[in-house]
Image (cartoon, rainbow, N blue to C red; front, top):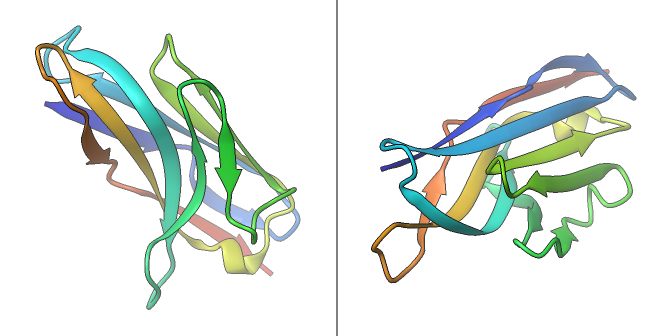
Length: 125
């Protein structure tokens, strides 16, 4: 009933920047009632998926130690979007990046967790 769609991935040289975007939409227009935490995760080949950054509806953020000072997460509640600005990229940032969100749909008493399909980020040395 809810889709998360990421965009903005690609190939960049080390030291470069990329901005990822993710929009939450309902299969039926207006079905999304509220969105709590939105986050970005990443998964490199042969590794477990890991949290990169998260942001609450009120704007509180948290980051993985490996990206602090380089990545910035933000969101636009009205547009139901979350962004990840990635600066000073390193080859070890290469991974598939996934958008994740806790979404409550109309007439539902609780939040459900959703994942996007992922977008590839490749950083060349």
